[in-house]
Length: 218
Image (cartoon, rainbow, N blue to C red; front, side, top):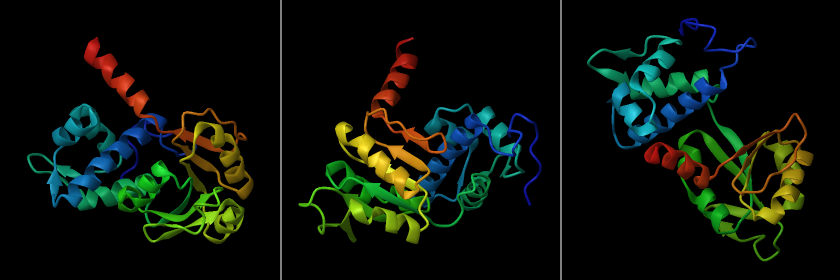
C-alpha cells in the first residue's frame, strides 16, 4: 500500500500530481522499462539520474513521497518500481491510441515497440491518401480517416497521435477532436488550435537539442 504524499508539493488540490513530478516520474519509468528489457533486476537512483539528467537526491525525494521503494546499497527493484510508478501515473493496464499519418514518420511510429513497452496499443492507423489506405504497416491495415469516429467510439480511445505534414496538422487535429479524442500528441511543428478541454502535447527533437545546448554552452 502506498504511503500518503510527504508534502503538498507532490500533489495539486485535486490529488493530481504536479506537472514537474509527473514529468520526472514519466522519465524514470522510461529508463526503468528499458533497463527491464535489457534484463536488469535492480537499479540505483544514481543510475536513473545519469539517464535522465535528474539529480539522484531529487529522484529519491520524488519516490519517497509515495512509499519506500528502495534499499540503501541495493537500489530499486525494477519490476516493482515500474508497477508502482504506473499506478501513481494511473497508466496501469492497456490503453488504445490512434495514429493519423501513414507516411515515413507514421510508419516508424507504428512499427516501433516503444508504445507497446509502456502499455499503449496503436489500435488504428488512419490516412487521407487513397494510395495508402488498405496498405499494411506491420500487422495494421491503414484505414480511411472517415473510419476514425467509429474506431474512437468502439475502442474507447482518448489519445490521438499526429504524424502528418505541418499543413495537414490542423485538419487532422480537428478530425480527432470531432471524433471525441481528448489528448493529442503532435509530432509536427505546426501550432494547432483545439477546444479548452483537449490537451495538446508536442514532441520536438529541436527543443531537446536547444535545451541540451544551453547547458553545454553556458
